Image 1 (cartoon, rainbow, N blue to C red):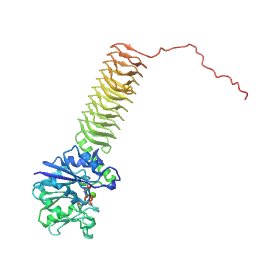
Image 2 (cartoon, helix red, strand yellow; image 1 turned 120 degrees about the vertical axis):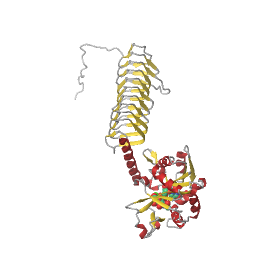
Image 3 (cartoon, rainbow, N blue to C red; image 1 turned 30 degrees about the horizontal axis):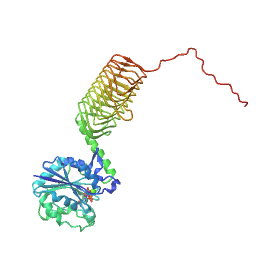
Image 4 (tube, rainbow, N blue to C red; image 1 turned 180 degrees about the vertical axis):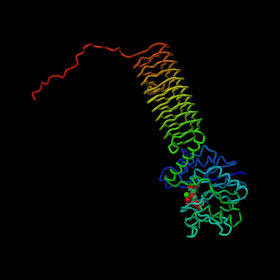
Length: 460
Ligand code: UD1
Ligand code: CA
């Protein structure tokens, strides 16, 4: 059966105190509404609709490249009114599932359960029991049968109803034909003067439609975000879940409370990750990789047996097996290390292809460069790749040795097994196996008398 998923994302979210629309705030590096879209898109035969209003331009630009239909709710007249904006694009014969752009961590399994109940003709309602139900719509049940009769909003509830602890999460699923019949019957005759979606529950009860309340596996699944405190709470829970998944997949985390994953991290066997590491985008770590403390890896692939030492930053880099990086190294986009390469402390690389077993161990900048195998780049070596206008390439052949504190002014090629003397500024190509050096000859004056302080000529 076809499923139309209506995601409400028109609200202002004023308590976020932000210029950014609430649903664009991120959990685990991904906007809340994107979490909902990604989860809902996994439902079979689903078409997605997002209702936007506040900050519509910003939300819409996120949605542009995605297969979702957008409905504009120009004025926020309530959740019932919001759902109604999407209905013209909803097929009569299917099911409608209502989700919220600010309830990001809803799980697929829960939604599938709801869809299957609704496909049997029921209205499936997701509820939770809260020790403090303040602010939520209360689930009113029949005293005798326990059947759900209605939802009463907090502001409309009697003192007796306020003591009910079972509350509406807002998430529901039902045959679309019912929704199309009931939505036009909503009135705004209530404490908030809004068209409440929740009023359809009493309509369903009156029409003897089966109403089935079910509960999520974890409370956080249905937790909405209204302010940044709640955002941070969900973020922590999300990170804990991800840390657990990593550990169950065989990675050792020095402290599961001190890892942040904003994207996807794939780990081989026996990976060890020390504290305070941040992973962004798509990161892949091979077997036996060690990531020491305070490292940041973004869109990077690390081969088996590599060790990334403390305080290193890697972005869009690809490392073959058994490389060593850091401490305090910065691998920028386009860095490719062949097996056994070593990048040491205070070294920056960019668009640098480093051959097998080559070493850049101390205080260097190597950018727009191709290094062969077994190259040794001495401390403080700089590839001068930029003349202020153009970037040029430095090529270093197999087994070349670059003395410390050398400047290689690109475009330039150092032949294989060539040697560059320390402190040289290399502006011309160096032939294979040659020695090139540009430093001035050292002078020496023996028994040189040091200057003396001049006698004071003043009269004081
Ligand atoms: C709603 C439910 C309440 C439930 C609670 C769970 C109704 C009437 N009440 O209350 O039973 O316990 O959620 O959090 O449905 N939105 C729009 N357009 C609107 C109004 C709201 O898109 O005109 C969106 C908001 O952006 C938000 C969601 O709908 O994502 C819920 O709106 P909100 O005003 O927070 O509803 P509550 O009063 O919390
Ligand atoms: Ca709310």
